Image (cartoon, rainbow, N blue to C red; front, side):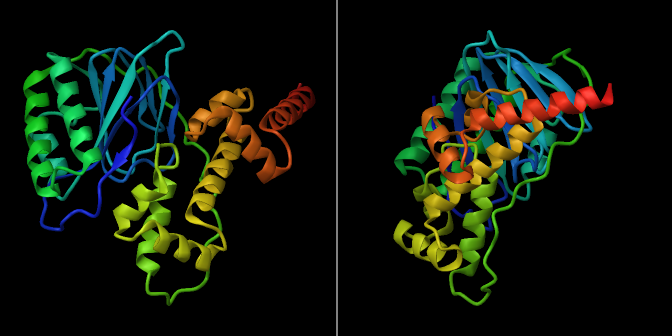
Length: 301
């Protein structure tokens, strides 16, 4: 598995740039607010369903590509008997949409990729280069453009169609923000908070956030403590816990493990932190929600 990696601030002159890259194993991906850039999902062995509220639901098989446009809400649920990885490449830039469109990749359905392992290895090379800090963003831009061309050349039209339509998901639980507006690091802090809200499900470390906003971890922690009274790590942890609680409200029959995976936390650590934050374990909360649902069903019947 390739842990989530986020690039730094892109050069405004770049028409196309790499925003993020990584892969995940069999877990639910839930983004009610979408993603800030185009996402190219690659299915390596794993199978599952993508649901875009108001647009439809698509089954994604092995060795397929599925692209989600910026700011489009989506949810991915792997099949229970599926084993493999779901790779993702975030691509931004003023020309990202037109390049993908010209390459014939902006279609609202999964498509098969011939020579899939070659494309996967290109994604892996990008991840290693980014992880080791050996590739400049300008060079990465050229590599992304070449990767898009390679995918377009390898694309095989798919007959997978719409299975159904979905409804919108619940709104975000927003962690309160400070009213202080005049601090020198305000813009960096706002961007850091936005990145956390966007990537709370991913393997996002505070160091990644600090690098992306051009600050040291120590300086960023000082800003968080000044404005929110907590460290950056504590802010991100509380955000994940509140997102998990919100998700459980909308999935009352889900398990504790599913809730933990939804926000990218290890289950035992998630249980401890959840109890510390809300005063009860997530399991007790699930039991309470199910009881309320049963009482509601009985009342309605």
